[in-house]
Length: 87
Image 1 (spheres, helix red, strand yellow):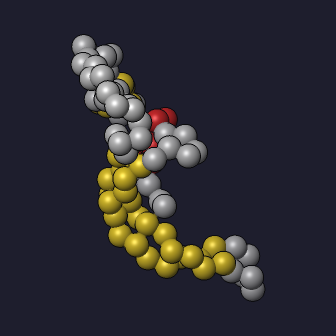
Image 2 (tube, helix red, strand yellow):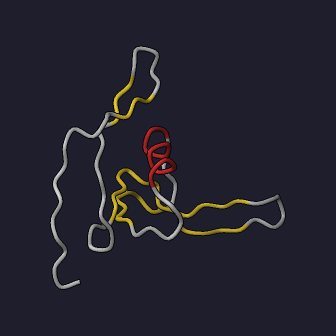
Image 3 (tube, helix red, strand yellow):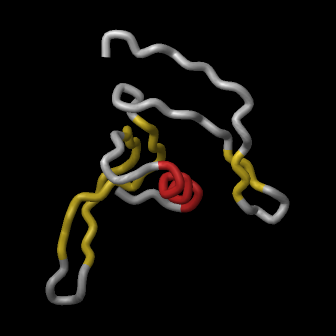
């Protein structure tokens, strides 16, 4: 999977190896490695990535940019909690 620009930055800041996610994007064949021994595989060029809330609980924080274009993550302005009965 490839996630570029802000999406990639947000994924790197949020997700960890093994997290269950839902990805929307376009699948294509890609190659990598040194010439002569390239590896080919299927890659998803991600447009949208979200946490699978059937397997995890998430806290959403809006990302904004300051005047210099730097990422600013807003403080949590309240939240709701739902009990996970039967789990």
